[in-house]
Length: 209
Image (cartoon, rainbow, N blue to C red; front, side):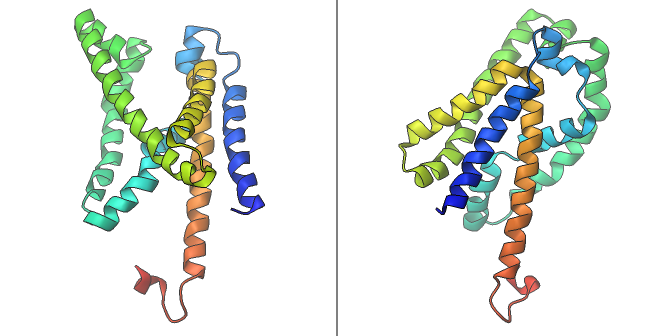
């Protein structure tokens, strides 16, 4: 890569971590750590949710899946906005009125502690496996770029994410998601414009599709 490429890559990684640490400062109570003191603006929450849904797997794995097996899986993404709207209308208000910190606390109120424990364990197992895959996908790319062993790249990425997540709580996570979603959007637009500009002579955008 060129020096400019290295500067952009390193700068974005450092900026995300430092921004998360800065945004998460002062999260010294349970209310602030888990709920950001209920002070997060709607646009930050919206982009954070979008960034959570659009992980590295979206840009790395699904492109390969689309190339190898077609675009049938896209129907899943078409249903996500509808599901989120329904959740916002029917589920989120219940959590808000209950004054709980997590969905599992609500399950304990609604049912019992055993239900909360079971749901929590299942969630942690599934998300632990999912997080491993989500970290492994970009680690493969960075392993090629840096020339590091895959395990080292995964470890470095994990440490950076855990650093601002543990120190700053939900505020740090939300604002870093917000920043990363902006970076991804700018990158996607730049890639689209570049791809169109580099189309061979006589090949239009419609033909390329």
